Length: 231
Image (cartoon, rainbow, N blue to C red; front, side, top):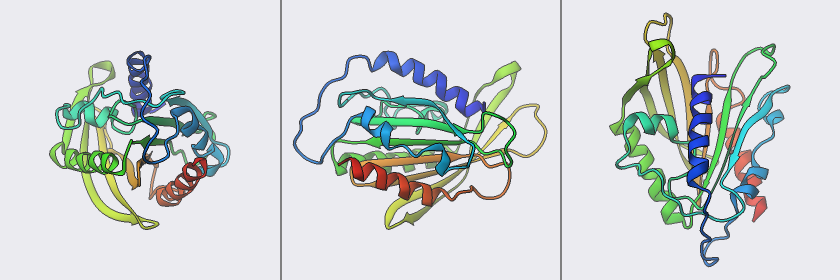
């Protein structure tokens, strides 16, 4: 399992303790679904690569939330790189995520995906979260934290570009990850953030070479369609 996947698993275990007491939100406004319902809308592993498996699934439960564990404005850059997209706790009302990977180690090429959905109480709240995310990437262009075997892991913002995904506002972030004392080029993570109404979508992948396949934009549009069908 990749460093990011392991970090996500640890972070999710910590947040599970913080989300044990959910609070219901008012039913007025945009149609809201629970984290458990959002999880059913996550793309099946077969939509990514034939033979892949969905693992490390997590959701915010059977009730709407308004738990704020992290503040994008005040959280450290190392926590931002580690937790954003991976865990709940950013003021959303529902959240779901999973890891999609080849557990056999025999498929080629090897590429690991993470898909996440953040649902907010209003389009304004979702837009605010999205804007703060993009601002945080620009202010946290690099960060580092201790890795295994005494190494230091460093995340660096290689690029961030605005684009449209099926007419939806989106941003493609390319992150480079290196570990001290490890030779070779950095590991490149492609992070696609997309906003659609009250929902913010995140698909992350780290291809062994070339561009992500299948394209993150096509995966995101499928994911948006599945979430829309819930409502």
